[in-house]
Amino acid sequence: MARYTGSVCRMCRREGEKLFLKGTKCMTDKCPLEHRNFPPGQHGRRRGKITEYGLRLREKQKMKRIYGLLETQFKNYFYKASRMKGLTGENLIILLERRLDNTVYRMGFASSRREARQLVRHGHFRVNGRKVNIPSYQLRPNDVVEVREKSKNLVRIKESLEVAEHRGSVPWLEVDPEKMRGVFKEIPRREDVPLPINESLIVELYSK
Image 1: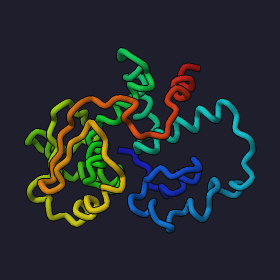
Image 2 (image 1 turned 180 degrees about the horizontal axis):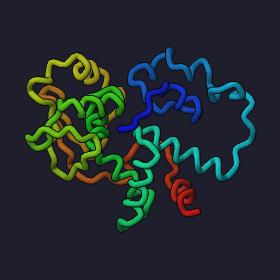
Image 3 (image 1 turned 135 degrees about the vertical axis):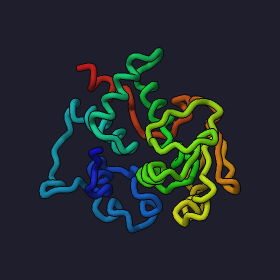
Image 4 (image 1 turned 90 degrees about the horizontal axis):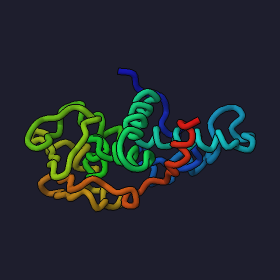
């Protein structure tokens, strides 16, 4: 499967804000955005005024990078959201929030969505008692996500749980750090999702 292998910090610099793609590093002064708050590249400091199309494109790129998706994957999610009842932009966010790798990150078992994806692929999690190694697995209300017994001593998971409280909690998840398990209580609502995205601009981009 194709995947991005470049520097994720360049993505934050390109968008001009922290997307928290590097885990705890993003919360320290080691974050490149603290020292080079301008787009990467030879002409990064001299970027001109952004157009209306560019504004919509940046919102799409920002969301795609936050959730760690490639272009085709993101487009498939958008078309699926457009066929659902309700607002397409909100449906898109809900579909992405229901991903297993995103939920593992939100629960605090990984320091970033990228790390969460790797942990899921390596089979460190169970959903309702069954091992699931598909990062895009769509969770349903009352699904139980837990760390496999053999994986509970992983240093990466323990260290992530120690700093997870600084990221804050979300109302649709219930987490028990001691037992290393959590419950996907309900489908999230847009107003409850802490995401610095104007999803209507993404809908306008794809509607052209």
